[in-house]
Image 1 (spheres, rainbow, N blue to C red):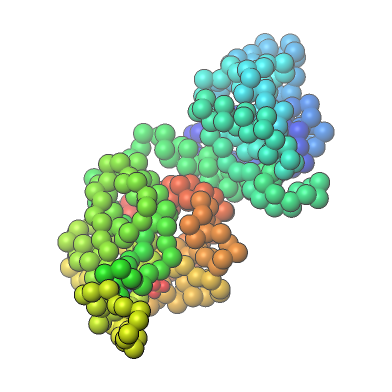
Image 2 (tube, rainbow, N blue to C red; image 1 turned 135 degrees about the horizontal axis):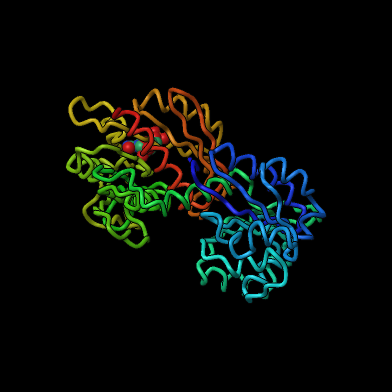
Length: 405
Ligand code: C5P
């Protein structure tokens, strides 16, 4: 996935530096090359020898080394890679980069580079939350630097909160997503991708309804990612408060039956992704006027089962998309339930995630998913929903190409 790509990795001084050793291994395993700048503080946590052995390259750690300057000047070094990754990005490195300081090799390279920069911050929670760091973060983001993490969790210093460096697998996914976004490759060019998203609302009367909890964020992020990958995208969305993604045909619906109809109309498609949280039942005896609270016995609500859109499309004989993907939002035994769903629905893949209240996935910005297929399970690291979407779309595009050949 990173074949022919090279990364300049800046390792700052933090306990998370040991994770960067793993990151080097992962980048190389994915086919990429890594050159490393190790700050002085970074070398207190990992040794140049470890880094050199893992990267298979000389480690750069001193701006004033004359040998380095004759072999490769610091300006050239800063531009030698396709992407600069700073992991761990300490508060100090962020502050230097935000203010354009250049008093060691790492900060000089960050100032001299003309390549995109990705930072994976790691620091104590109070340092992260400090107004100065947050100011620097905003400046760096304005400068176009992309961030992955930090994650919430227990820190080496015993405190709890945001500040833990993103896991190496999540940083690798962010690197892959960066290259997928900027490769100019449009793996879904010429393909029609159909996506359902959001909840459905099943009216009880004109003002009340039955619904599932769903913000639609993951489905909308998938639509954006598919569009970025060059696809023609039809997004059939239940009621959500999200803005319409650009470049995507958005069809707004209320109920499961309307969603089903819109999906049928949008076929044929090459890839169909059913990310909507469709209500399983609709109200058979929905009232045409608002049901009054007083003076009437409450009429029982009669339910009828909604069409299972995913199962129907999976079983289409003529218009079945080449790749059909379902979602499984579970609150327990995620893999067991998702495996059963894969068979029951007849789709090619199930993307499963834990939506128990403690996971914070519902309505949140982050997600951690498992991709289940007949050939096994791939678990992605926890990432923001846009990154999850980019990785998923890249996987689906690859499967579509394989199915074609
Ligand atoms: O059966 P369950 O609702 O858990 O299945 C989830 C998957 O099935 C999701 O991909 C969802 O979009 C899809 N689904 C559907 N139509 C339904 C119910 C679920 O397309 N009526």
